[in-house]
Image (cartoon, rainbow, N blue to C red; front, side, top):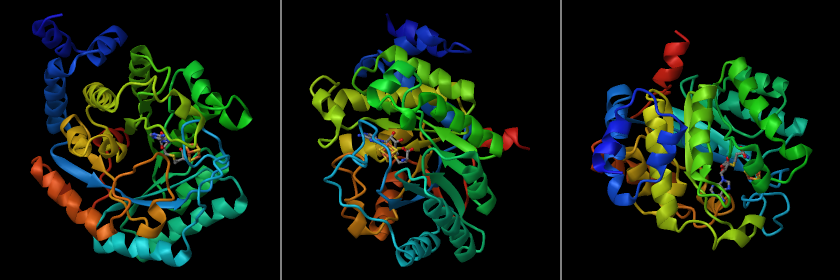
Length: 362
Ligand code: SAH
Ligand code: SF4
């Protein structure tokens, strides 16, 4: 295919599965038109502003056994922690001081009443300490409808639940095939969250073992079909204390996984111009400039870490996480500098809802 063919496909009103596969397959030197198109669409639809979600990694305890994740229950090497009330109050104070308009509360999946009530009280505490000003995104896994409702009523308004893969067969190659890891339930939770009124985000890992370009194209079409307000996707990073580690030599190289992630991000932006899209921290693990590159390919949200520095290394979803040694202050100033360097502006003190969601709920 010539450069002219790439341009012709990029000009199409709607990209179909074959177009997406073709563009996902572009070599690095042929990808710039795709990236330029995504950046142009982003600038015209959501501008050059970056929304912040201060990330609070509440606990690494998890009841599940996803085959890729270092927080899985069966990983006996992890050093378990749960933030104390005092630590959480500190995170909230930092968010207020650093003028983050929104925070994201993330953790392993737990189902006890004690856990779900604790999350409710943290949501209320964030609202109380910030005088209702800080927006709240949750990423606490699959829960019962009444729990999602309780958290929504307490003040959370966004929820991130990645589908991980929209291909059921691939889903069961990266999760145990049992009741606790049901593909059907994952999809039902996404639908349920939307019905309750959350701004819902979903996403995937890019470069998983067994994942094909067709799978990625279907994932992009899945995001569109579910009409989500946010997408969070990042490269898969093998973790040595997980079952998928044994395929580490069969997956694409770091460089290729990064490139494929950028192409996927760019295509999601083209297909869904007004959504919010996160530049995942995992990008920075594969490439020191990974987060900036993701912003230049369509991302408009960044999650600076607020987790106390002493606990960060224990939230090891994947190894070599960026910024584990940093303090919240260092994360804030480093981000400001990085974002300025690519001519983008951080929006402080705002919830930063996606135009896609706002327009639908006018
Ligand atoms: N327990 C919650 C939230 C924490 S996990 C949940 O599972 O939804 C957050 C995300 O980390 C997951 O959705 C997954 O996509 C990502 N993740 C897990 N292990 C990873 C790995 N090895 N490489 C890259 N991303 C990973
Ligand atoms: Fe637990 Fe989430 Fe990791 Fe799965 S991805 S093991 S649910 S923390």
